[in-house]
Length: 398
Image (cartoon, rainbow, N blue to C red; front, top):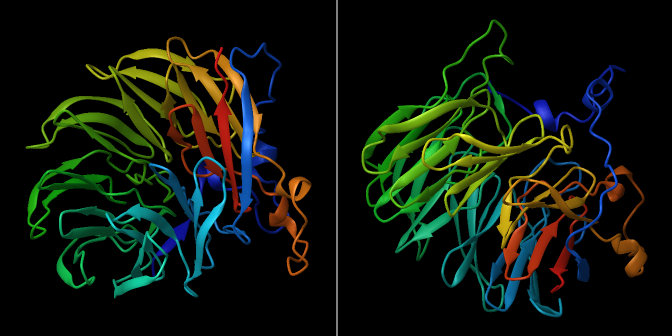
């Protein structure tokens, strides 16, 4: 039976009285600095109990004047982007482990061995389609094909109109792996996805036919933990080049058409990267933020002030790089040299609104960890923490 574990930055509490990772490797203390940006909280909204104790990332989806978000228990809600007013809400009565993904006129969600599509207009259920195992990443759509990556190493192509299976591709899964799956990326007629065995694969969007395969990381070490090489981090495609990174492996640039390596360097990340301009921004497994040159992977700067704080994947907002951490702090860093520009904490929803009487007191109500990359639109940043508190943050003009 496959063992799936949360290790490295995700191991918050150990068993049997053993010290936690935070005790063995305490996170960096947040130091004082003079903010260069002013940030305000525009609004905050609550989606039930969020993801509770589950270590799954459910980033909101921003689209024009709306934002869509979901919690683990199946609540999906649409809000007006400017005011945070609720436009509609639906209860799917099914687990949501990944999404929402943008499916054109529908929202796409990964569940317990199924994919669910609901209408963006009003949240009505469009279709449900079975797959072979749990789906932890947002399904992706291009044309009439929805692409889904499941935790058992399978990649599916589904008909976007009704969820009917079109094709399946799979890779073997190691005995031990990180609990997480990176979203497949679609560029034209090519789908690129990373797998738990350290491989990066491109397949045809139309029929799932393999086009190329590249080994991004080779298992090393004597223990199963040392040999983890999952390519679960978010990857990106820009200008015909794939940028990808794995855990205890490498970060690399590859040609989209053939998978030919353009450059590589040793690197370890579980959260992912983003590409903007001539730079790659990435958070490593230890919690440092890096800026690398797209041309050759060379280091432009490295910010270590947030080490050990279990950072999300980065996002870019104008002249800043934005990351969030395990205590719900959102940090803005200067793109040019990585200096700290601003810091705010996600709002305590309970201080803003009455606590629902049906919500029992338990530990995860205080867990403000932001697991997914911040979502950026113009001068706003949107983040949702583990409690299910969705925050709209605005960078004020100078």
